[in-house]
Amino acid sequence: MKTRKLFALSALLFSMLLISTGYAQELTFTEAPENYRLYARNQNDSAAVRFTGKVKKGEMVRSLVLKVYKDDVLYDQQVVNLEDQAFSLSSQIHAGLHQFRFELFTLQDEKESLNLVADQVVCGDAYIITGQSNSHPSSTLSTYSSPFARSFGVKTGYETYNEEDKAVRWGSATGNCPGLENEVGGWFIKNPYGVGVWGMDLARLIIEKHQIPVCIINGGSGSSSIEQNMLYPEQPSLETSFGRLAYRVNQAGLKDQVKAIFWHQGESNSNTEEGYQSYSANFNILKKDWERVYTGLKKIYLFQLHPGCGRQREGYYNELREIQSQLADSYEKVEIMSTMGVSGHDGCHFSYQGYLEFAKRIFPLVSRDFYGIQATTVITPPKLLSANYVSTNEVELTFDQAIRIEEKREVHEETYFLKDQFFFKNEMDSAFIPAKVSSIKAQQNKLIITLEQATTFSLVTYLPGKLYEGTEVIYNGPWLTGSDNDIGALSFHQRRIYPLKAWQ
Image (cartoon, rainbow, N blue to C red):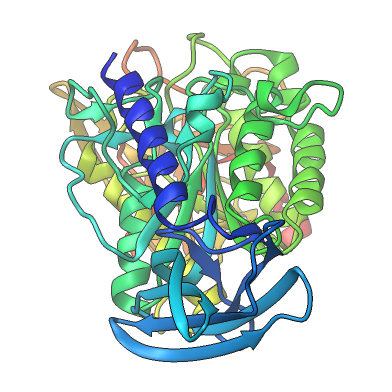
């Protein structure tokens, strides 16, 4: 009920805005700025704010006056004489932590009459976040707010975008949501301007570090499969998650200016064989549809899943995570970030602090890709490059960066060792073969696994699918991490081990 009242109030305020700013007076507009709007910056760090429309029939308007204020100081003023009923004028604004106000007047007999005011307009960057529940966590602890963090419309999840939702236009982004009773949650609550905890903190980092306003539009749907996030042209668009998100982005005027999509999804597809086997092909379709709809898309940031959050005890969790790694290797546009080792994991979701780690991990990649920052340390998760026998009982794993071992961790009063989280087999999709690892040792970017006996295994996996072996406890460390960045290594599944003779 509170949410409905909020939407009704938003619609009322929007209607009042239309009347008070003159949309219903001498002029009708086909294009004009709105309060709180973010215009996406171009390669010149600027954007054109346009006013187009017609003078209403019967009105005698000879000239228009446009006044633009930057942080309440007059920035631009134009007088346009009208030769017919149509008009078109624009003003250039520049990216930065500045707010612009536009005042458009009609001029008759040297008397100015105010027709439109659009205030708190900014120029910056636009991003999309989508996926399932970990893409859009809300929290009562998420209190950060900024006049330079914006969003558009309502994150409705599975619910159809109705007329009340359509009346909600631009506003200040939030990491909280209406009616949230727990510290973290809101997976299925309608949320105007909701971008999620880590979306909000990512916006904060960009604003504070790069001095650029940000719009994030979050289209996540809790528990959704990749199929439920795909575009189905045969269905009315507002009946699909893809369509509802695309509608909001288009209404915001940003469909050709979205820089990147952040994608956290896959838990629901790891429950069944069909779900994981179709994942790669479906992602390829989804990626092409994203690129077709969001024509300016430059990057897709994909999060590899943390163990847990599947309905089945024995699902296809390792398989799905391996596919996610392969997707990042297959597409130049796709970057992958690990969630291994993120704190506060409860078996499916994360704590408020854990979600802040999402933003902390992904921000350096965004800074590199869009803000010209050259990293002085490694900013990506460790990735396995190769596995080789170096003796009859030693397997050497080579990573793309120096690694660190967390030898052991206590979880629910039980101690688990990292050396026991490597699994071996000889044939694809067969059962793991019992093998005892006596020790593991890190040497720069190499991990030496010493087995108790001479072996000839063909395939190696890092991490159990969901549970510690022989338990009902969801895996939560120990972890293999990057020594420079403490980011958990990407898990891998059924990677080939080259035999000793071939290696020699």
